[in-house]
Image 1: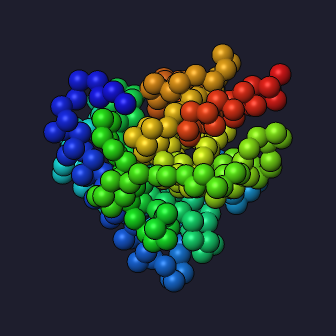
Image 2 (image 1 turned 45 degrees about the horizontal axis):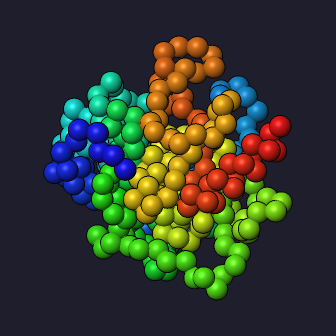
Image 3 (image 1 turned 60 degrees about the horizontal axis):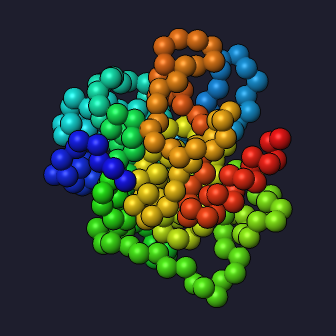
Length: 286
């Protein structure tokens, strides 16, 4: 992971803040367990509702808290949040990508797999990530975190993942729980891109693929995977290439380029598994 021209002391401070914010989000999520939540569904007014994209009151409350903390700590930085369109520092080099609850459908149904993801981009490059997970390799809640040039950590302690050589078929995250013919893993679908990124970094999943993720779904998890020695590729018409930056793109309906419009397929994991999955996807698209 390269750090561009960012002093490490700045990255460390940003990482500390990201960990604090992810932990704060986790505390709020835990406090909401057991109570009846207000839930609404995203969609275009007038369209037939599909009830497939829920937002709970906790999503909004947590994003408000995170934005308030960032306004105090880094008031000049930009924020790209899932629930609110406000951009306090548009065009700033640093952008905080915030997903207050990734896996909201799981959360509102009481299914205990969800996360809070904080990612930081510097000129489009993912440089800091902190992901609070409802469960972990340690069978408890906690925050996976990393910064460019640093190591993967879990709750402030370095984490080295070690695969058991006796396990011949490991696990992979896929958008759909259907097997990839001929590939040497079994498929798992968690319902949270952020959790799958963190689980790849921690070695619980060997590889994961996302069809059209939003920036806030993966910006917090990409630095974790890179810090753990993994590889990240994005897909486009030219095939699967190493992800260098997440850049603003134009909405199909027109308008100015915006990070909110970025939705490229991603594969991340150990280099060999990423290669295998990319080749399989390339073959299936021919």
